[in-house]
Structures are given as structure tokens and as C-alpha cells.
Length: 253
Image (tube, rainbow, N blue to C red):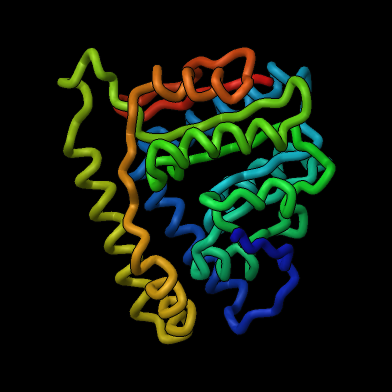
């Protein structure tokens, strides 16, 4: 059963300045995991504003981690209600300690069926983002995520999914080196964070939580994502951004 909580005001012993340091360094990790991160975010914003005819009123970032994307979207659209959902206790700690007041932090499990109602209630949103998250899920749960994202979007709403989506017709342009560099950046970041004693309790929670939850590494091509979006009830779906084997699919209700 999914457990979610809206507790962005929970006090933690982590100083804001230190949390900001780790959040900034997380941005470096994400830049390795999603090369061209800056251009992707520009495309995300442009696609959302074009489809919606302006700024969204409600934004939900699924698998939002320590809240960097949510923070930037809140800065772009200061009147929007921006929420993020994640399960990782360490990343949630960083988000709660330093995310701006315009971002609400929720704890929840994307593999569960309850998070849409728990997070959005009866208030659908205009934009849902899923960045470098869907590859953690096996195929059936990835399809379910498309359906649940559709359920929380109002008519005309937009879903943007960015992840590893290899070009199946051009395997030579799907470099393994990029993934090796991303894996190394990820590992080093967690090793450095683990060395700070203050994170000890949250690291132990994280290790217990994910002990039996290895990433599925489900990375189909863009055609699978567009098909999954249409099967979930989106009327349009297509690629709006690509950088080598990484791409972003935009789907419109």
C-alpha cells in the first residue's frame, strides 16, 4: 500500500546550507545521468507552455529527488502549485531541508496504486514530469505509471517523461560510455554522502527500504513510450527532445 505524506515543513537537523551543497552536487550527478540536462529543461518548459497556452497552475514531479527540477519550475512559474513525490528518505531529507516554500514535498511509492489520490486529491494538475525515474520500474508498472499520470491530469494537461530511450534502429549512436560515466558519478556521490555522519540514520533507512528493490533497468525505445501513453488515454504523444540515447516524450491529454 502506498504511503504518502505532505511534510515539507518537518524540521530536520540538517542545516539548510549543507543541504544546498548536496543538492547542488546532485545536479552534477543528474547532468551525467541525463546529458544535456539544461537543454532538456528548456524544452520541457517550452513544450508545456505551448501545449497549455501559458503557465501551468499545478505541477507534479514524480521521482523528484531532492527537488532541483521542482525548484526551477517553481521559479519559472511562481503562481503554480508545485509538488514532488519520491520514496528515497535521503533525497526527501534534502528536499525538505532546502526546497523553497513554493514546493511541497510528498513521500510515496510510484509502484503503489494510491499515490494519485493521496497527492492530488480532487485537484488535477496541468503538468506531470518523470525524469530519469521510469527505468526503475518493470514494464507492467511503467505502463501503470502512464495510466496514473493520466488520471491526475486535467483535460489538455501534459506529461513529460525523460529517460534512456535508445534509438533501436541506430545502435551505434547509443554509447555505452555515457552510461558508464553516469554510473560512476552516481556511485561516487552516494559514497561521499555516506561519509557524513549526519546522514547515517537516513542512509540506514534507505538501505533497508531498497534492499529488495533493484532497479528494473527497463529502457525501451521511444515507440514503446508513445504507445504506452496512447493506451493510457493520451490523445497525442511524441518525442520533443533527444540527446544521443536519452530522449523526452511529451504526451497531451
